[in-house]
Figure 1: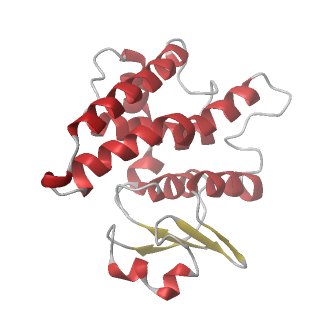
Figure 2 (figure 1 turned 180 degrees about the vertical axis):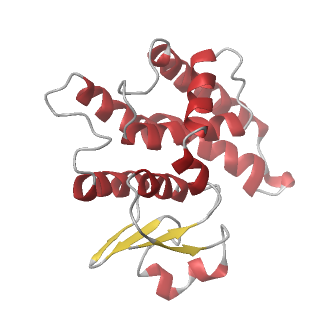
Figure 3 (figure 1 turned 90 degrees about the vertical axis):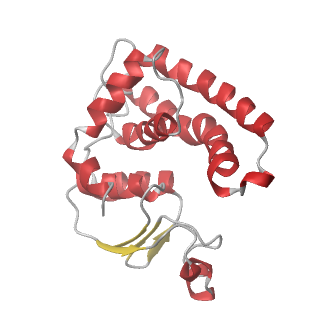
Length: 201
């Protein structure tokens, strides 16, 4: 199994899941925007020239959420996914998909406008709008996390995806002083050895 990986990217989610599952894997490391990711050869792995990509024999996947679901279904043996009959299962599904549906769209705007674009092309109106939207998305998550340690009550793949998105939000300077449950949640996740390893491959 090979993971195409860059630090500070969604590839961290996949590495984190691999580490939690204690799976053996090879890492192909890139810098974000590296020329080799724009090559015709790499395009056969990811048509947009991005990470993560997971190669597992004849299987190649390039969406972090899909990769995490694949790893859990194929190698999880019931770990990190609630039983379908459990009341935690719908929570798991909802919060597994919350990151890409709600948190990451404004995060992407903030990253583009404050990091990727040169200063003369940045739009502060876009940044303010995205920060306000992101704060609203996180407020809903804060309400959910007020009385629980993990999104589906026990650590699951949902925490790998949406927990990672929450960490990114804090790293981007969102004011977490009004989100005590999320602050504690992120700190709790950062104590996991699997995540610590995944962040510095």
